[in-house]
Length: 329
Picture: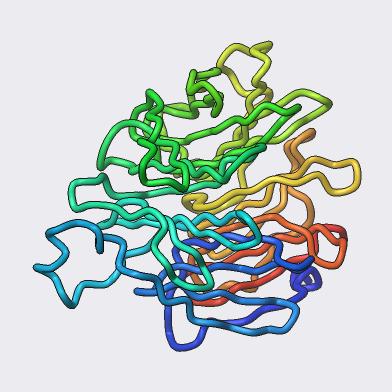
């Protein structure tokens, strides 16, 4: 049974769908931050403890906010980081630009305005220095922006088309950002904002992306609207072609994707509209074991992390539950 990999499962209080999750390590244990509500919630898996996280109104600093006294945050996408001993969260949504808060106090650290573009995806930029976040807006505007904590510093805009999914990683000390969108997969250097490379995915949208290493070389991984998993070599040895034919298995769109190295095997973990979570061997392109079938609706978020020294995948979706799967079996 695929459920043998299931370590923990817990549903958020009330009946809520989840559009995104982010995971941060706090005092040696994972903390899962969940969207899909007017306010955020967090889940501490080790204690199975849920906590509501009210946040100040993201538009509070905009003079127009006074005209909407009953307005609430509209949050669909979230990223987290630790800064100076506190957890900071960046979030936005289909009708809200990106803002940054202190998770524990709910204090607004960097607000947004009514003329800022809405958000479809956010990721934490990996690397040294103060936390930075990267955000895109799907069809709302072309381009990708990198934000710092301070509202005094303008965002850095990266040249891009319509980007739906984002991820960031540090490889050999180099901070890279990958985006998936209408025209394929694009990769940028987060330090200087320059495009590193781009890849084509057969005229279909890439909703979920990640960056990994395979046999010592960096690769981009993309999940598409038709349920295919592509792997591209960033070294350029294959041009803009994938290193092999895409892997298939999902019935419908791949909504979320993350990567890990488990033992000596590089894997990708995907979540799809078909309600399944799947593990893929990046070297061979094969699915590892049967699909993981604990969710009863579309899987919207996948994050790979560690818990008690084990590699695990944290997944969530429209059924309102967060599930943790053992990747070491």
